Image (cartoon, rainbow, N blue to C red; front, side, top):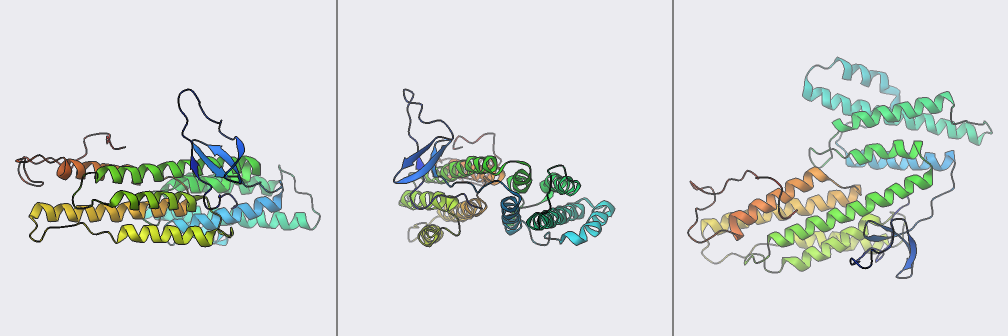
Length: 342
């Protein structure tokens, strides 16, 4: 995959109503780098490789590896076992087990499609002309499409959320011109950076005014910047040796934060500190998952924002004399609609 900008290439556009700013897809020199503008962010532009089966093969293989790296264990089934995987899925009656069998079938379908495409590229290299309407090309596309449909059953390695975007990418790379696929990836990178900003801003707003975490915002700002840069960086880019350490250090600093407690804390203060630690741990992990997958995780993001909203209402917006959290008459932990922090 060849799509990510180097260190310092991320810039958020700050246009006003009189200046709508550049259009999506605009390419310009920004900070000495050729960048593409997408949804409020300038992202370093990488020239897509020339169109051809060899380039598509390399792209699909990279996307498939990335897919299996971020989803639950045990579903990377070799394509040669496709018939077994399909029979197991169709024969399973238990809904929970059937979901896992469906995920395994999706993996087998992806691997079978990749094998077919690899063979077609080898034939082309030997001088055999492979037309777009070739029967094997059609079969490859059918396998990828079926895998995409089953992808909704697959969970992210870090929890119960699926990452539909990852399942769609190999099919898009197969069915679209490479330049079009690259353009779609810039859109996803911008959306990913938007959610990184949203998550870190929400956590910062949640603890604004907290006496237990008075110096949290600078750490969150550092995490956001490092995370957005890592979202764009290609593993083969030399700047990875600067950007990845920066992200790891920013994440570690946030994980090590401990809420300040007085010498004789009340139960409520202890409860607040425990909840603070939990939110910081979950939030840092979520940013890490999003950065590595380089796609948004909307379900997990919504859940984190709801947790932050409940924390703020239970502790920092808690009025003197009101019921303690968990006491009769205390505010429920059940979210009551859209979070104002979102």
